[in-house]
Amino acid sequence: MASKGGGGGGGDAVLRQYIAVGTASLSFFIQGTSLGWPSPTIEKLKATTPITDAQISWMVSVLYFGNFLSPIPAGYLMDRMGRKRMLVTLSILPILSWVLVIFSTDPLILYVSRFLGGLWAGISATVIPMYQAEVSQPQVRGALSTFIQIMTYIGVCYEYILGPFVSYTTLGLLNVAIPVMFVSAFMWMPESPYWYTINNRKEEALEALTWLRSGLPRSTIEDELQLIEHSVREEMKNKKTFSDLISTRGNRRGLLIVEMLAIFQRMSGISGVMAFTSITIKPFTIFGILMTPDICVIIMGVVWIISTFISTALVDRSGRRPLLMTSSLGSGVAMTLIAIWFFLDRQTTLNVSHTQFLPFLGLLIYGLFFSIGMGPIASTIQGETFPANTKAKASAITSISLAVTSFIMNKIYLDVDNTIGMYFNFILFASACFMCLGFVVFFVIETKGKTLHDIQEELNTKKSDLV
Image (tube, rainbow, N blue to C red):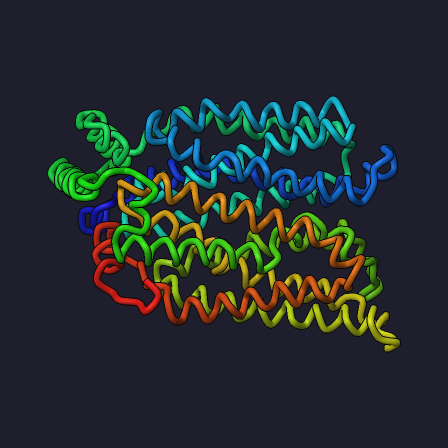
């Protein structure tokens, strides 16, 4: 739990926080490779392996079975082992996942591989937002939290850029290098001083905090540690059970905010867009240039990354709520336009072949707006919202919500296309974006510039009709 940061902190302290959080966020680079891998790989598998659309749908979606199962054990283990040691130890999961891909194209083996990748996704989604929030000062916490989305997009873009131009096996070899890189770097980073404090290891907490606040006066660092200790004592007075998540107004309100933002994030269509863009967009020509699906997904990946950097620059200036509202509105409008195009193209006799570029343009606009708010800020708020006695369990439940929603949206994507029409997928996505807008307006609090202790006090005092 960050304090007020010693009056702003020095440049060296901020740099070290960026290094620690950036290195930890490599775990989401790994997750991004799993999310992006199907897009350039599906057509290669179809060309070399007898595989049906149903098997492809399961191959894409089984990732979320693993994602569903791992968060609760991860929440328990991160409190017992520590955030850092658990991540380093369990990074064997994505390594094994990509080793299986390297040596097989059999659908059953790929199911196992994707399941292992999903286990890792659930672990990282549970642990990293907590670690990020616990090592960061308030004035940089929002910016650092966007690293999660940036690294996810870099991982996706890594697949989009390399996938079309290397063999199936070579892509697997390139992917297995990422978790190896993560372990090699993150093992040198400090453990969360918050975790040390929870476990009564004051000297190690002070050592970790001293590294993270390098350049600040010793007295300032000790004052921050005292605030952490006070907050932990207050928050740990209650027993640590799942019932604690609804035992107080603050916990209920925090749980509602975080879970709904997680659900809206995935219902907005991001999982399906990442996995199925290459088979959703058809080739088109613009200004004499042939735009293939492979080229389109590369451009989209780059736009996602650049847009998230915009969020990084703005989140601690403009605040979470304005970015979330702008993001959900813009994403909803973009998805609505795509739905209209697919309806006109496939459900009417109107000839729209001369506007084949419009779905791609709509997805670019969606990606831009999603990446400045709904994508990164949901993780920011997850890391800021819960007290010490419920932090691990709340994070686990959030990861499960993400996994279940992603599984449903990915699993129905091709089925909806085949039975109702592609346009209906985008109607669902747009509806979720507009519902998110309304939810943010009425229920989400602003956390910009506040300590985690301040946020808890506001959640417990600000009333809501629902909680």
